[in-house]
Length: 62
Image (cartoon, rainbow, N blue to C red; front, top):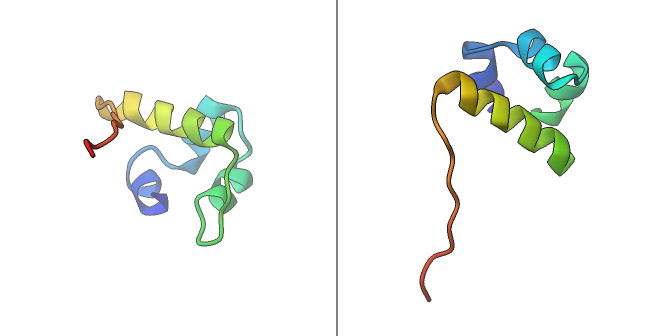
């Protein structure tokens, strides 16, 4: 995810859009990152908008 952010919008633009400090985002998407759901979904939502895609999760049939 970190590579994707660097290759597309960059951490500074993502930080401005999500109102999250750049360093916090870099830690969140680092190897030992452990983001809060609010921060993770905020970042993913912005990245989806920029890429023009929408993630969809559904359960698999049993």
